[in-house]
Image (cartoon, rainbow, N blue to C red):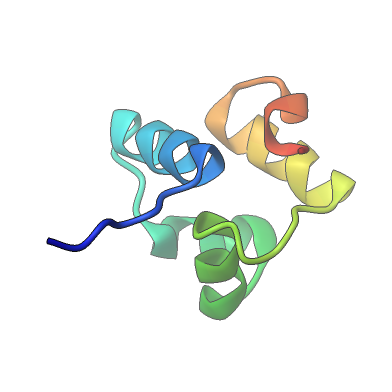
Length: 68
């Protein structure tokens, strides 16, 4: 049996995307390239303040939710 580690952030981000029927490709225009979006979703890269603001506006939530 293998254990898969998923961070709270990854779970949160994926849940938010699922709730609003958003695909990673939909975020390319919001925060950058497909690679960048992928790194953000899997919590491999931190989100800048400007990216947090853009994501907050896109998802219609407080941008502070994206800053850890």
